Amino acid sequence: MKYSARILLASLLLCASVLSTLSAPSVTIDAGIVVGTVTSLPFVPVKVNKFLGIPFAEPPKGNRRFAPPVPPKSWSKPFKATANAPSCIQQFSCPKAERFVKKLAFNTPGPPAGESEDCLYINIFAPRTSGGNKTVMFWIYGGFLDFGFNSAPKYDGSSFAANQDVIVVAPNYRTNVFGFPRSPQLPLEQRNLGFLDQRLALSWVQRNIHAFGGDPTKVTIFGESAGARSVDDLITTMPDNPPFRAAIMQSGQATSYKLENSNTSAWDTLMSKLNCNGNNSEILSCARAAKVNTIKALAEELALAFRPVSDNITQLEFVDAARATGNIAKVPILTGTNGQEGRIFAIDQSNVTAFLHSKIPDQPLSFYEAVLAAYPKGAPGLKNVFEIIGQIATDFRFQCPCAALANSSSSQASIPTWRYYFNATFPNTQFPLFGLDLGAYHSSEISIVFGTYPILGFTEYEVRLSKYMQTTWADFAKHPLSGPGFREWPNVAVMGTAEKALESDTDAGTLDAKCPLYQPLYQEADRHVRPKTYDR
Image 1 (cartoon, rainbow, N blue to C red):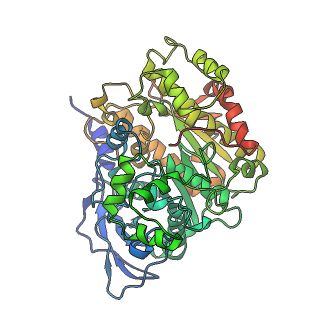
Image 2: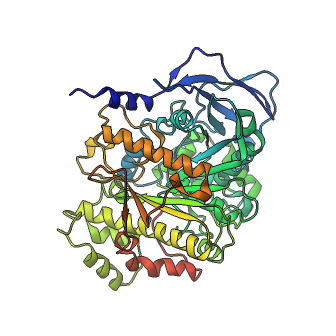
């Protein structure tokens, strides 16, 4: 098949960056001189200064394992920020079948520089254009707070920087037991280490982004899945003078999570297997001396789940109450979900009733009967058990909490809020190994927003939609009070349609028709009793 010159040109604008012959960029930050590389996208006139693997914290290993991050020591010689740094330790703490799905869908390819506890590094993508005071987009990756890394190819910020004249910043942060240990031996305020990593990275941006041409007063935080949840945690815990002025949440928020602050069973089990006992100091010393691969292997073998605690510093106990009273950061919000978010989590499921009892346990029989009745086999989009389970997961875990957040932020907190709905599917972003129609699954919008979708098998519509969404995100970051794209925003903006329109309107009432089924569970959270839901 022959592609027109116009389509080929548009796709090449978004393909992987190549090295330029320009002189290496050099900047001076608070810790010393940093030297990066210059990259370019084919046929794009703007070059990009790329700085990879700049330390923003001391390595959290040895005695610093399970400890809050601290700024790095200064260096005397120029620091070469020319290659990706290792990711933090990845952990797939879930049953084997689910572990396989997550590794294939979210961790492929794996970290390009491997894994290490020495992982608190930040990547910068800055357009090589004149003038400073540029808008900054601070990306927080997802991964269920179990895994994830800033060096994933789909998070490459070169296209954003070159085509939108913004600076993209992407830090690593600790996840799983290394980021959220739930250790009773640690002070409560030191247990959400991954969130503290994110905060230190934001502080680093405030101190240093001007050296790259950025304006520290023009920071937009954005993230997907657990990254979006992290964004919401920052919004709801920083009501005064936040180090950002706008926020974008893709398929995630801080509400409706399973939070069990008194439950330290995963940590206790791990300590038992490591033979770490004694007083608090002895247990921590033992845990810090254990081999990192041993900790990782035990956590995965035993499917130990480590989740944040509500310390009321980095995560509130009553998120919904804070949002309802407006005691949160008053920054404009763009939030949304994907059409078939939950299908990727239904791959290894075969029984709707069993799925409901497993993921939404301890509910009255009437609840399960009502949910089963609301998703009849044979209805549009529900032709088999896979699609039924996928749609239940989509509605309960993503669609309805997103609707509640948007409504509460707008009507109760009086925060300018815009909502999108991504509903485009492309063959080159699917997983043919599964042999299933995953649709617009969870995380499938990321490569479209970043312009990093696979160049093999691209379509003209994919090129146009990617450019449109990336511009929408960047315009919102540049002028958040004006909203995305300086235009009248519909009730819910649909990004991508079967008719290949770039955007269309949909009624929230239609989109959220099943949400009343789950509303009582969310209302329990409003009454300060968290619903028992499944973690992402």
